[in-house]
Length: 342
Image 1 (cartoon, rainbow, N blue to C red):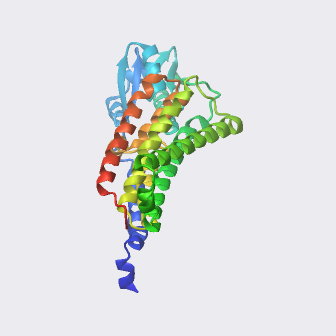
Image 2 (image 1 turned 180 degrees about the horizontal axis):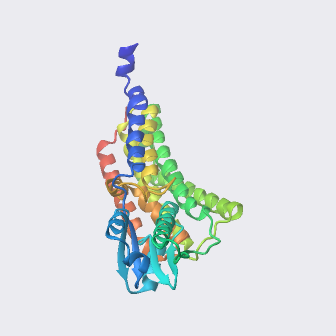
Image 3 (image 1 turned 180 degrees about the vertical axis):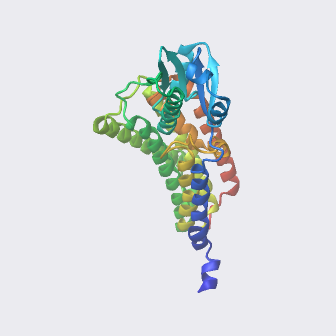
């Protein structure tokens, strides 16, 4: 019985390697050591920051990277784009902090950090009325709800799951049943069969997008920006990328169980590492670097930019290029590994 367990690679994978993989992922995500600093722009003189004791300033710089800026409007635009976590300025006795709600983890860190700075500055003046107060302002419309930021990530994950699993399991099933061989001998050109399968996947992805957006708009109050139709080319490019991933998984797998396991191994961790379920703001730098290598991260970021942040065409070229390049590489590798028979 033990030898049978050890020799079953799929059992070993699900029992040992898969849980260990999630231990590594969550261990990195929840590790405060090495968490990235919050980039904050400081406009003009801010007494609460400029007059901090050296020890307190050194402690602050372990979690916040403060850079002085001169153009407040440009700095606020960078906050909306996600390039800055916050912009801080001083208005009389108020510490004014502008932040973005697009990343709720970073927003909470910003509010907590500057509330602590204000409290510390007031405590240094014992026996007198508090000098400073904190004024936090969201750069987006205050009516925006969490659904604004949840929808793009979950939609990206759904597209990745559908395209990858559909391609991987169908390819293995067709190979085992002999359908691939019969299609090859049928009076239909192979490119026609491939294009038909790709076309079906693209139509399914567009249907998923319509369902997700409709439910989010009419059921949960999602507010779309004027450039939201740019989601469509992003979805098409993302579908091609994950179809290629599924083709690769199906090309190297001999059974449907193996194809499902390999697809899970690829897509599920990628969803966590790409911000589909929660922000990666608190993750260490090495994990952020790994995340930027994943196609789902670029699909999620692109959809967030055009659906929530109001960006235009400039926000879709780079993620689309990365997704299509990823699709081309995976397709070439799959073509080398592809087999018509089991």
